[in-house]
Length: 87
Image (cartoon, rainbow, N blue to C red; front, side, top):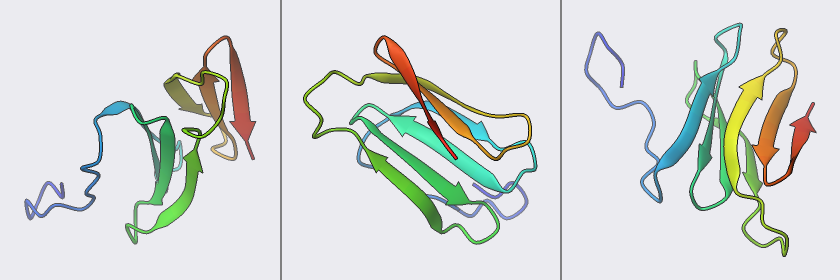
């Protein structure tokens, strides 16, 4: 939601979010969901930057949390017994 106008900015109704993070520079919003997907949006435009869909993988990738690097140029996903990093 935009605080000043009360207008809904993003809509993700398919499933509930597990974790939501804003990049250190405030440009990106990343969210992980119960359906084993991670989405990244550009906050200025509201457009998708990247979608990660882990639902079709055979190994269990229950993504529990996400984190941006201090510079905001990488996004890490904690999943199962390991982690993945997107540049």
